[in-house]
Structures are given as C-alpha cells and as structure tokens.
Image (cartoon, rainbow, N blue to C red; front, side, top):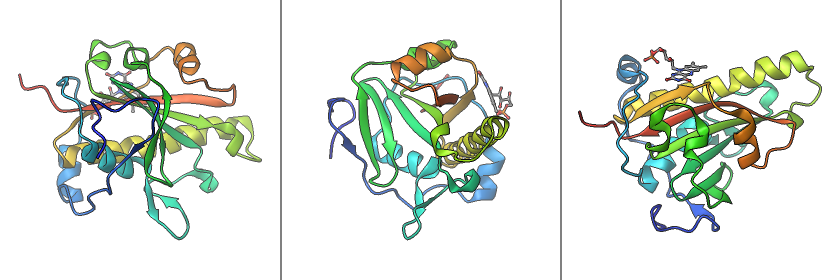
Length: 201
Ligand SMILES: Cc1cc2nc3c(=O)[nH]c(=O)nc-3n(C[C@H](O)[C@H](O)[C@H](O)COP(=O)(O)O)c2cc1C
C-alpha cells in the first residue's frame, strides 16, 4: 500500500477499501460531534483517509453512483480537494483514489488560523457550477452551499465516531486558493474543513 508520507504527489494514491463496520453508533456520534481547533501534526494513515472520504462524499450505491451526501438534482457538483503535507489531491469517488493536483503543501492557504498548516488534512469543498445545469445564479449559490454543508456534517460525524478532531472553516483567501487549485471561474470554493488527530494537552 502507498504510504502517505513517502508517496509522490505526481502519482494517484489508491485508497484502501473503506471499513464499513467501524465507528460508533450514530446516536453516540451525534452526542460527540463538535468543532475542535487543537490538532496533532501526526499524518493521517491511508485507511483513515479512505474511511473519511467515503463518509464525506463517497459512493454508497454502486449501481446508481449515488453518494453518502445528497446533492441538488443529483448534480454531485461538490468536489473534494485534499490538502496534505506532501501535495494536493482531488478525491475521485468513482475509483476511490486521490488524483494529484500539485506537489505543494498548500495547507496554509486553506485558512487564516494557525492550526491549518499543522493539521495533517484540510478538505476543500469546491462547487463546479458547470454541472448545475438550468439553475439560476441564486439557486447555484444556495444549493451548492447546502450540498457542501451536508458533506461537512458527514465529516463531523465520522470524526466524532472515530475520535478525530475537525472544524469547518469559512474564512480563507478564496483567490489564492482558487489559483493554487487551478480552478476556472465556474468552480467556487465554498468551505474548508480541517481534520486530524486531537492534540493531547
Ligand atoms: C459555515 C461555517 C463556517 C465556519 N467557519 C469557521 C472558521 O472560519 N473558523 C473556525 O474556527 N470555525 C468555523 N466554524 C465552526 C463554528 O464556529 C462552530 O461550528 C460553532 O462555533 C459551533 O461549535 P460546534 O461545532 O462545536 O458545535 C464554521 C462553521 C460553519 C458551519
């Protein structure tokens, strides 16, 4: 299996099959869901990353290709970019792989708070408005935000169920981030979410 720490950012990372029987029951996870801003710098292992992305917006119905979070008109317009220490990747749910975007550590660009460059994973939710055919601009704004929010809550619950730390973040330099991800004008960065192991204080 590819090791996250030694893998090259120019090659796709094949994620191991997600562990579908792991974690706490939903009602327990709901009790534990919270935002945490103290992260250990330890990198997440590939299995955790695989489980996390499946929970976030993976495919849960192979026949239809539908996902663990709902999306307006099933447009599935939210892409998840994954900013790691050794590079930036795009989650491809169909193949359950991480596609390389660049070999740069852009974690710092994903927010203005000190922990974003220390925490191992920053998820970046990007809406591709090109996929939202026939929606007017107002609905594109609202629906893509709602869809990203559903993914955000999946991540919160997954983290609660696995004793991982997470916080959603709406404050970041949109322009710098869009440039680093080579986004076109119809691709909108909606939200970032930091994930990692909680720092033991
Ligand atoms: C859309 C959105 C944007 C947020 N932006 C930030 C942020 O930029 N920085 C931050 O530390 N927390 C951010 N948060 C986390 C909230 O501050 C947090 O959810 C709130 O204080 C309630 O705490 P809880 O999540 O532990 O219940 C954001 C949450 C949401 C839903």
